[in-house]
Length: 78
Image (tube, rainbow, N blue to C red):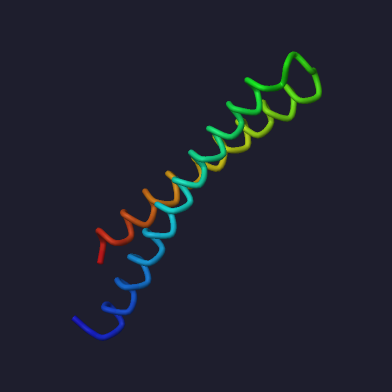
């Protein structure tokens, strides 16, 4: 077990922590989009903006979960 392994493990742990933060931020955007949808008062533009916010947040969440899974796989190999 060399020094490189320790630095790689630390880097992967930092990346994993960043992915957790991204997941929480994404959930916040989903909640924001839901709130925007509720207060849109039937305005088509506001409803479309809220739906886009929710869609983009879900895409971000999928990316964050995928990245976390990849980091876990790499960390498991080490």
